[in-house]
Image (cartoon, rainbow, N blue to C red; front, side):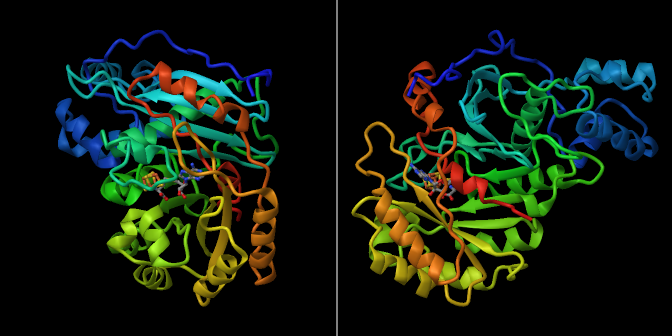
Length: 407
Ligand code: SAH
Ligand code: SF4
């Protein structure tokens, strides 16, 4: 796999110098207002100044307070004394021969003893859109047997700011802010009004619904019309099935939902997705049926990873179709991405085709696409050895993410 020409792990920046002042990059509106209060701004000015800062940070992509020319110089200086606009650092980048990029991102240290948590973020460009796959936690508390992240303990939740910052980092790197320069060594979507990052999927590390408040706040920042302005319909939150949180997700966020189903009976799903013991399939599907905002125009995506000899028989394809009756659903079949030490294998191609035919004949378009970025996924082992803490996940159902948010 390494023979693919562009498969180079590239350190992009020198070792980070830990910032001592907190960064406002990724802050919510409330966070910005608080920062301005701390900087001594009179109460009557806070709202207006916060709106100016917001515009600079999220619309213009400002990285330096000095650039914010409509803010009085003494105020800019006061802000710069107390805060930064520092982003997390891309410490390694891999570019696939198909243009997919994988970044290892080191978060800004949260204290003197924190060296900075590391997460992965993947960018998948297409002609008319660009999808960013973001992480919500460092590691995961759940232990799905086919998932590499599941072998890593939860290190910590990411803050809303750290979730938003992944998008800022991607847009910086892709030249997606005004005046930015797109990289020349890969594919970036083009065309009238097409943004490099147009879609977001919460399918990186972690269970987003176990970090719900921060994910919700991050979505609020991402979709704010005066800033990054991403469409809610182009943001998909993927969950392994945290039933009690589904209603709040639909109500408070209004984003698209993807559910990691992977099995059609509880006995099997208990072993693949151990959270099923707490929230079995019937409860999960009942919550999906009641999901606020789901309709035939806004279907819930059911993810189904194809595991050889485990969940891939034609009978299971038929059971899947029966199970989803009455749910406005899309089905995404994901070829399993193997990783070192896994007991699973990906189903044979004929098996996947047969499965997909049954699902298709039942009325679900279920394209099984050629995976993107396979060459760099193959290099996950390297990434892991470079960074002790990060268990680079040899997965990321890239074809799945490609099918996301197609409005
Ligand atoms: N925790 C959330 C979101 C992150 S995982 C969830 O489980 O939904 C995103 C998707 O990747 C899930 O559908 C998960 O089942 C799938 N996945 C995990 N490991 C995989 C692997 N090795 N191959 C293919 N898909 C995998
Ligand atoms: Fe966690 Fe999702 Fe992986 Fe399961 S599949 S271990 S919930 S990240």
